[in-house]
Length: 296
Image (cartoon, rainbow, N blue to C red; front, side):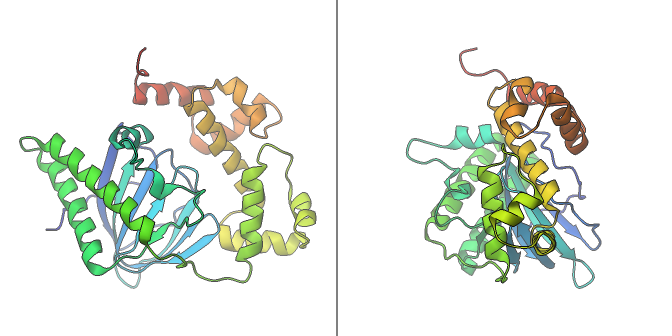
């Protein structure tokens, strides 16, 4: 069974409160910028020629590969559509939905845990496991499209099965599918430093001194491996962390100083330039989508 193909949308925000799933096939696609989501992404690669960057990790994808991307990870596909159509199934799951589907002793976000010693974004499974997961994804799309009796119960069950299967496979899956690169160790260290010290005053100069590498070399290799400049990455990471704090209920005016922004005006300008809305508008929209908290 193969689900129908939907027209591609470049938006990076969820419209639904729980999950969305799409099957795309494109013969031409413009460059996708380095970005992140406020939700979890499960990406089933079906065909095409795609080199995928997640933070500093580089993956040359093969048909059947599955990428798992958390809300904290900046990522970007590099697509060559002149060889064959680029086809994939993309499943987005909100934080609240993932939490609601999880059970005691079975937290379904474990497969996305960036702090795990075995953390990897790429699952490269045997053909039988790949086919089973793709069939479940196709069934999930079909149930949502046809909306027959009990479709909501069926979609919830299918989504849970997909997430349970991915967590089981992640516990036993081999790692080390990243494309090797002689600069990846240094850049990974730089990214780790930025992620641990994003609220401090970080610059290209200070990073150059910290890692004993020239500014020119660091700037060039960072751009090549991560897909953006050091300065832009720092700003994006600070904005990501600010969004996490606001989603946790903190007021925008209490967030900026804990995320490396010198004052609220700088935070406001950076946030609006990146997301097209103000921090307060983001908080209002997030509250409306998630709904009232239990007990309120």
